[in-house]
Image 1 (cartoon, rainbow, N blue to C red):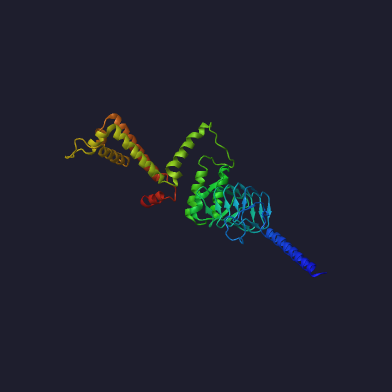
Image 2: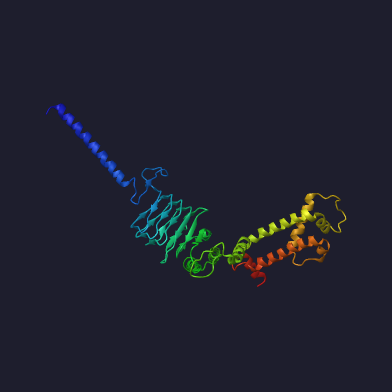
Amino acid sequence: MDEKKFYSLTVLFLALFFVTAGFAQTAQSVKKNPTVYPYGGEADSVRFESPMEKIPFVYKKADFRFARLNHANFRYARFIANTDFRYAEFQGRADFWGAEFESAADFRFAQFDSPADFDRAVINAKFYIGSRQGQQFDFTRTIFSPSAKLVLCEFAELTIQNEKIKHLALLDTLSYNLKRLIIDNLKGQSFKSDSKAHFELDYLFARATMYQSAGDKYTRNRWYQVWNWPRAMISSGYHLTMGLGYRPFRLVWWILGIIILFAAWYFVGMRDQVSDYILAGEKNQDKVPHNLDLFINCLYFSASLFFTFRLKKEILKSFERKQRWIIISEYLIGFLAYIAFLTLAKSGSIVHNLRSLFVG
C-alpha cells in the first residue's frame, strides 16, 4: 500500500470515528433530556438560562386518572389546561416543587405514600382535594393567587397558615352533614387548639350551607320553590350586612350609607325645617345660609337621629306629619341596627368579645 492510500484511509477512519461519536453524544443527550417526557408533555426551556438545568414541561392536557407513579417528578411543570389526578397512586415522592396550575386541578381520591411537595407551587384556579381515607397536604409555602380556591370534597389534613384559610371552599354539591364532618375533621386534625382557625372554619361552613337544610342528602334549591324564598332572603341579607355574624363590622358601611341617604332626603325635602330645629335659639343666624351648610346640618341631624336610643318629643313637634314618618323610619332602622350589631355577632368576633366585656 502506497503512502497516499494510507493517509486517505486514515482520514476516512478518523472522519467515521468523529461522526459516530457525534451521533452517540446526541443520542445520549436526547436520552437524558427527552423532548417527550415519560408522563407526556412538551419541553419549555424558556425559564432556564443554563442548559444543564432540567427542562420543565408544559402540559396542555394532563389526564392521570388511576395512574400509578413510582416517582412523580413534576418539578417546575406548567399545567395549562385542566389537570386530572383522580384515583392516582403516588407510590413514591410526589414532587410538584415550583409547578404552576393555571387551570383547575383535581386530586380527589388520589393516594399519597408521603405528603406531596407543593413548595413554591402556584395555584391560580380551583384545586380539588379530599378522600374518604383522608389526604395530607402541606401548603405553607404554596403561592395562592387571589382567584385560587382549595375545594374540599372529602376528608383532608392540611398544613396551612390561618391567612390562607380564606382560599378554602367546600364543594357545593355535598350534603349539609358531610360538610359538617369535613369541617370538624379539619378542626380536630389540622387546627387543634387554634380558636382563630376554628372561627374562620365555622364561617366557611356557614357560607357553604346558608341555603341548605340539615340532612345527609344534597338537594338543589329551585327558583320556583317559593317557600324557600323568605329564608334565602334573610340569609342573603344577613350575609351582606354582617357576614352571617362572623363579619359584623360590615354593618358599619351600611350604617354610613343609610345616614347619608336620609341626609340627602332631608336636604331635598325639609332642609329649612332641619336647619331651624338645629339652630333653634341661636342668635347669630345667616339669613340665607349656603347649601353646603344646609347639607351639613342635615347630615348631622341624620347621624344623631340614627344613633338616638330615646326619641325626643321636640323632634316630632318641630316637623309636619309626613316629615315625622321619615324621621321615625330612620330612628327605627337605627334601633334595629344597634340590636343586630350586639345580638347577631357570632361567638369569637370582636363585637361578641366587647359585649362579653361590658355586659357579661
